Length: 141
Image (tube, rainbow, N blue to C red):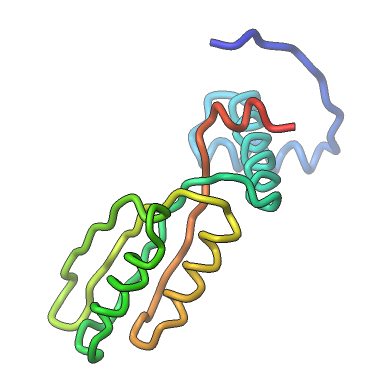
């Protein structure tokens, strides 16, 4: 475990009360754990905005009755080459499938690919989540 440093902050009482309610709902044991996660999230946002290497998951739900849609989605993934690490496919019901695509690359390239896939006719819902390793955040400057 990394060496810990202590710091203090000043907050308005109502802001602190709202923060305490939030961390209780989320199950944090103390304010320090919650603040560490918030700082990590802010650092990750900076990494993503800087077009640095990230990993991500693109989750999408699509209507498999749309002609050639599954083939188009597969071709897009093949065209992306090494950016796509893996994909998993689940049949939700008679009409809909869920697919999760795991990717690695520069944040802007992954975002562009996700946008193309999500704009494809027949893709009904989708969400891209980008992240990277905790080690990368520790060295972010």
